[in-house]
Length: 180
Image (tube, rainbow, N blue to C red; front, side):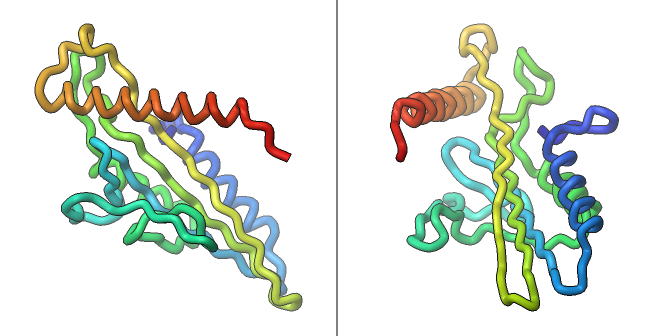
């Protein structure tokens, strides 16, 4: 999802294109605001990848009537350029939980969610349009027997497999719902 070097992933491409579009659409009566957040879900706990200190017990996911779902205490960083986002992604990647397994030398052991909030403010009309995009990098699923996992790696693998199964179930149920 993030990639590196010439093999950039979809996340850097989306972020760079967003700032290119902002630059190409500058008008005196408009302002743009972009905020960025980055979290991981590891062993069923949510951690802010933009904070150097981890909160004991993880961050809590909440639901609000107006806001919808949000992560309480998650750092939202205002960004003026793609270069800022690039630095934040590098910072978050360093903190993200990875480990060596028999299947992969540097396996991500967590799910990562990058959220970009975008506001377009029309000054003369006093109108604000806003949107958000969640870009998700799922942890890889590994067969427990062939991965040779034991102890912490086994527990991690179990959490990853359970969450991926749950996601699959949610997608299956949502496909069967008819929404009018």
